[in-house]
Figure 1 (cartoon, rainbow, N blue to C red):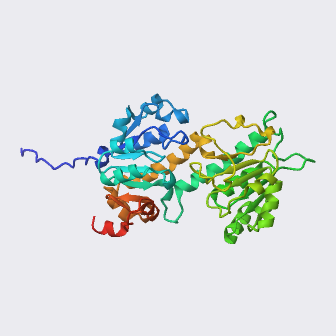
Figure 2 (figure 1 turned 120 degrees about the horizontal axis):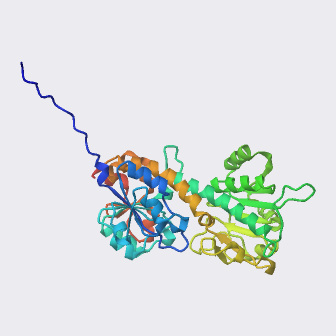
Figure 3 (figure 1 turned 180 degrees about the vertical axis):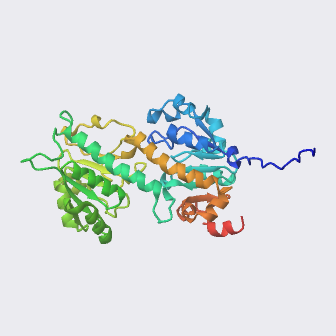
Length: 393
């Protein structure tokens, strides 16, 4: 009887992604309450073989406990260990102390906000060859910005939800509904801009029964808003007299990102209604925005009910999205799961940037060089074209 002949057996290849760690440190900014991943999203990344580390208590801002993440396979650890990960997701601008803790050659995912960046921290990131990608600048194959668009949509909806609550407050507000009651004139909502945040704000206001006026100088964008929202919204170019008239009669004003509206003077603000609710969705870091004469109330820090509208004092609310951080975390998680899978499957950041032009749009520091023109001007440094660097990497 012949001896059995041994046959070759294929061995299962180990996934290279198992060695890649993703760090989720707690936010260092009091005005940034959003968090990048929910426990469910973290579990998906763990199942795909990635090591997810989270700082103790980092998700308290979205009312998730450490135990909720631990059950999904996330390692709960200290801040230093989290910041020494291969990929660190830190939504606000990173400070110098945290930049010094990052591992050389790591990947930092954050929001851009150049006016909030620390120049010392940025130079340290370049010295340590840490590659930085701004989430809000990333584009997809349709030249859309998935992170920025979803957050803008949340900002628009949150602004009108908060405005409705403020108006209905019988103590500090007027004690009125937006509209929808027969025989009662509805509130007027003026929306400056026609982007994702403007459409979300207008759609929410229409659903609440308000009269909505939308202003923008982009006629094509206004035409698209007309098509999407129908005759319930009144669209107009930003003719000064028409705009000022709408501001005077508005109960709620929402200035959106990149709306193209000039700054509203203090004289016009004084002509606006007593108790008008004003939001500026594009203002960051107390930079004044569209209403520079108004004091700002950051909704991530203060309860809207703290504002006494019966005093006649007008306030500009900012950071509307951080008032609903858990919704933002869910939305961000949806985009992160796809992005991180694509990014890590490319075997390195350089390959990912070569293969994905939309991801390349988000890079602002690469291989120790500023590859974003605005950032380079802020640091008084020479801008380097990332496409040229990728050819030799």
